Image (cartoon, rainbow over the protein chains, first blue to last red):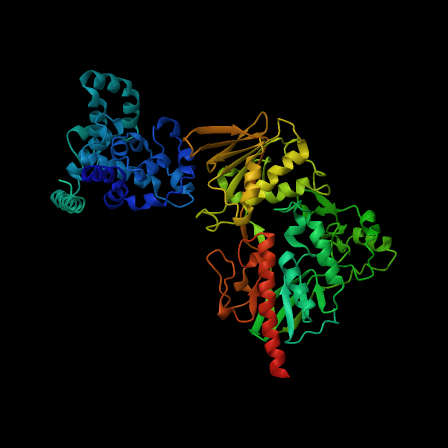
Length: 206
Length: 430
């Protein structure tokens, strides 16, 4: 009987909403959603999502932890802010989507091959190195993300645009060799490390 | 209007809609001196502009007729039309209210024969029909207008048109030299019944009220049903005059939305449910007649749940649980297309309709802080009950988003409060 009780408790007493409120950026807004559907209808990529924001919020409240955190839907957000502007309750929906994506990533259960996630990782690694984005290196690492052959193919496809950007001074051809970083790189690295420590301690991550 | 004598035992009622009329009549019938001030040329307010009102679906003319008869029979009641209260000074039991009266250019001799209207050719927007059509510049505001007296629109003053009207009048009722007047009234208590106005629908950008002809508001829809309305009682859509049979109602248009009105306007659900019954009235069993209500949740306030159930049983009416995200236009057919995702199953839809009716929210008509200081209002501008308001009592939609039933109740309450104030004054002076 006691086991049965514990089982039922496990099933119905879900803490996922509380977990989201505590650990996800802007997650404490989730309970404010009144399920009107304006965000889902306003999303320009609405058709491409498996779970619209409206649905994600309901799933969080229903305790569907696994399904939410492994969903690739929040990675599809392009930050157009249509949903934030229209939400009758002013939920920062875009930020919550990014917060959920980040949390899933930190837990290591975000969809591994999701292209947005992979690009986000490339971007992060690129920018923290010197404190400024090296656009040439970022583009090349993006082209070669799916192997050497694909990289060469994409690079050839983009030659025209690349030359145009070089001509108009939009791309630094020497970018492969040098990076215009910030002055105090080690200071930045220290600050980021400290921030990560604080966040991990608060959220119980490692 | 030199015959008006006001003392600090007089009750001033501001606004001549259903709430103000009720308050004025009830106070006057209790033997108090009452001055009723109305901004429009006639009494009746927004209720007189409805086709029918819920829950019994009566025509407002019926209730108006009873009120008008009671007003005419009462000697304690003075009515000032085309008048506004611009300032209130003083305290409970001893207020000074400044009243500005715009010229009507027509005096008490008017018999409403209509000769001036026939003589004049100029036309102006007709506010009674929410400017959906035009009316002659010498006009009777509406059939049930009280006082039953014509008005000359100021836009024709100084032109030949005004002279034409004057010449046509056989009763010497037209006085083109009338001027705006201002007077100070000494009163003991004030019933503030300035009512509501529809929220500016154009501000709800995704619904395109200002871009699409076939997106209208619920108050405009009411006027369409009226035999004396802009479409002669037919549901004709504005873009091409085609009969509108497939009609969408969008709930919470402006209400319950932190970008617009934070409050629930309370009447809109019942108003839309009521308006679905107009389809049966117009089209009988015609299978093409369809009403779709897009809603977040239906708030058929308390006793009206049975009305909601009746509408649910109507095969013409379907309910879609979704706040519409945006509206686009199908250029070819002129149909507005509603886009969104429903909450019961998360289905994405793009539904074309002949006509879209926005169940528009209520917002207070007048900002009282510009007229009297120290009156407590809530975040939406409605007047709250507060002892610090002194001898100023809100009635009807000046106090909250209310239906007719609750407005009348609130008017009675405000009347009772104001009677207590003037009774105290007379007790002190006795």
